Image (cartoon, rainbow, N blue to C red; front, side, top):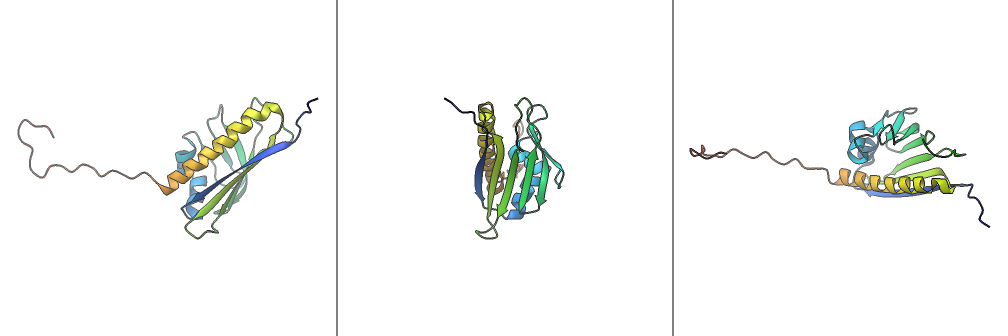
Length: 166
């Protein structure tokens, strides 16, 4: 006989980033920077009690910022998930920044919790866990290998020859 799963489950993602905690914090909390690694629809009102949105308004997830401790910790408590069965616990994402490996490196841990173990939540759990893993990988690349501006082409030193387009 199968028993119903009634508890909750969580996930953990880790990114060791070659950037100081202040730069990583900015990437987590400044709207223009969040959109670079999390997507154009992401939105944040960066303050305790503010809001954090991942994805667009129709299919995205929205959270309240519960803990806002600059350069150290950002905790999100998500609103009820649209289209999902009720869940007895709050769904939480906790971003923890640590520079124990030196001032120019940040260990960013994301601890997610509160997702129901019920089978109806399996696909959601996988999507969120995999999505955050990919998101933190994009964050790492964005901070460690920012795009370089290409120099503008220089005009020819000599005037162009008649009949040739430059």
